[in-house]
Amino acid sequence: MGDNNTNNTDIGEILKKVLEPFEDPANNSEKIAKIIALLSSFTTLVIIFIIYVYIAVNICCRGKIKVSYYWIFLSLTTVQLLYLTTESVYWSLEIFQPWMKEMNVVMTNVVIFVNPVSRSLIGMYFLLVANCNLERFLVTTVDSKIMRTISILLSLVISISGPVLVITFYILNFRVKDRIDLNWHQLWFGVEICVYIIIPLLILTIFGTVNYCKVSLTSRLLPTNQIQAVKLNIGVTVTTNIAIFLFLVQECLQLWLHQLRDKDDEGESVDGDEVFTLIEIVQIFVRTSLVLVTSLGSLLFCCISSHCCRDCCCPNINQLEETRYIRVEKDITTTK
Image 1 (cartoon, one colour):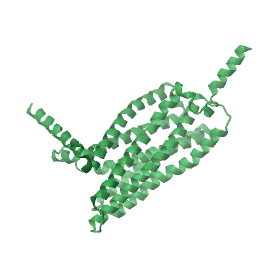
Image 2 (tube, rainbow, N blue to C red):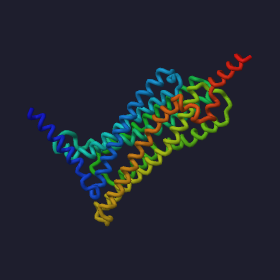
Image 3 (cartoon, rainbow, N blue to C red):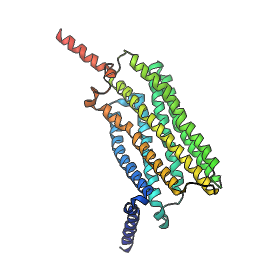
């Protein structure tokens, strides 16, 4: 009984310390921003998990799993869920770690590796969206199902293994280095920009444009699942471009902070702690915005799959739906 009371008291004290910044918001703006980021990421995680269950059931029960786009999209939403989980863990450690370390509840260096893992997952998300666009291109270009399947599987393996290799080398090199200097941060900034931003953005720009032009110019009738895949791909591509921009801003702010801290350590003049606080608050805001934008893909699936949104969503693309023409032909035959 005594241990339970002690644990309850400790938890109550931790929560009280966490909420202390709200008593003086002017001097604790960074801590308040972290708390807001934690609440946003955790709330988004819960909502997206519920939507993820709906997406998995919808894809499996309605036969959409036969379309290769949807099992790639299912992998995409799985990575999205893992990314939101790591973001929630990161902000939890950032907020609770100072008091949890005193109680020996968590290891002290976990937060160091959660951050790069989160970046690798968001990079994997971007690559999988690029893979979705590649799949749409192959479906409309390559006639052989075997070649399409091999190409899609190969690109899917590369999309997943690329970020995994990056984070693996990051952790291995981090463990052997005695000091993390500015050159280290600049090196990994360049690596992550190339793998997580430039490659998916290049694929999205090329194949996304080609896919949109093909849909706009085609007159070929398509099944309902293919029509939904086309509309979903367009929406996810647009939101991912916004997310890539936010991720680039986040990475630039992070590198800026490292540069300022290194100058401060070397004794060069830096304009006080207000500059650090301002940059960190902006970075937290951008990071929270990135969480919200990446969650839009799952919401788009719910809207496009809904019958009440089908008529008002993308009316030009709806005209290519095969079932509509079949229904019109039946009506004409009945009239005659």
